[in-house]
Length: 185
Image (cartoon, helix red, strand yellow):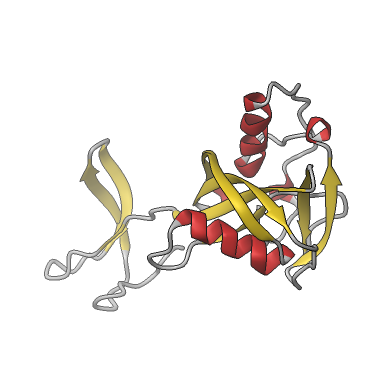
């Protein structure tokens, strides 16, 4: 999120070099000397679930996404929420499935939305019931998955590698170029 005005004193923010561990970085900052506010632009933490259900992997298509685009179930962490609890909550909210096991795959940057994705492989039980956020879902045998070269697709590839599955990349142009800004990865 880019701010135009300081959330502390309402002065219009300006770009200026700010020192950090990497040297000088151009940041939005309050020019008022008495304020000192700097907008660091830190990424937002989110969770992603590679959902296993009855031996198959479920990928979902968000409302507003183009036909044929499927990805992990994702969502933002709540304040003070443990990531494992957050991924279980998102799977319950979006697919109405109960998570019985959750194991971290890895952490991935989703640059377009300035997010850090904490991705898990989750084993679930129950009957799938889609939330209004999702348009549809598709089931895949693990070897049929075709990871994409960004964000949660990299988690799919890492999970496949951990199971010695052959990886065939989905080389379609980036979904980010056609999907609405509000859609999830």
